[in-house]
Image (cartoon, rainbow, N blue to C red; front, side, top):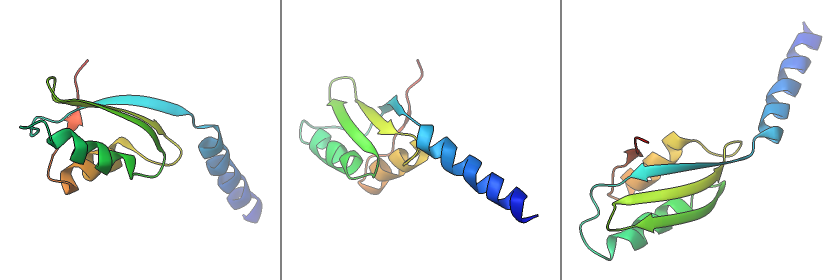
Length: 92
């Protein structure tokens, strides 16, 4: 039983260690003025694992490069929502 637990822990660690950068584009329709992207960019930049954020005010989107071993899309969406700008993954 201890071996199984050790193997499962090693597998979980290995998956996180091999996780690489991912890119997601979020739709942020609540951005209504040119100052809004600053708040959205700041909120997303503070999420652990985020390495790059580009906010496009005219398109109402935020493109985020993040480490999937350190954060999730749900955490990114929560960060924008907590900043007052609910977001969702933009349909491709």
